[in-house]
Length: 123
Image 1 (spheres, rainbow, N blue to C red):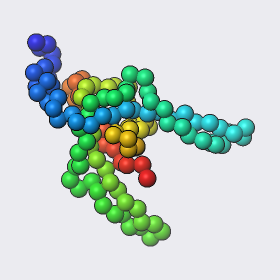
Image 2: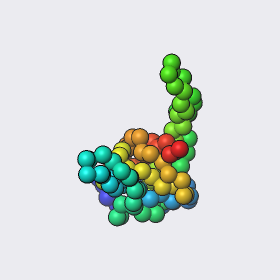
Image 3: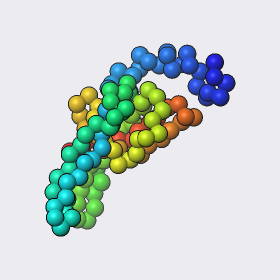
Image 4: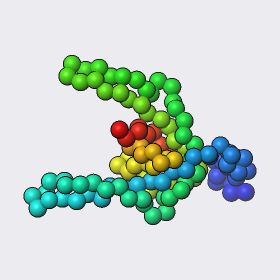
């Protein structure tokens, strides 16, 4: 057993049955016009971050409607636990989870062994 590990290896094996979702991390490829304006954005999978076992859940108190004087919008944030540590994921990426795209809002890493994402569905 790796004594520097905060999570026992058998614990990760036992948790495998909870990772019922599949996640692919995507990055934006921006095409610009001659003047520098964005003409299109295409999202493509990031090498090494394809079909990651994951568990998608809903945190309490992170969903609802926000009303402002000039607009009303909905917040629907979910938590995604990835089965592994992925330091290359950034909050400018997108997560494709079971054929649904999510914007990554925050990235959290634990003990060099697990990665959790706070995500919002792309509408």
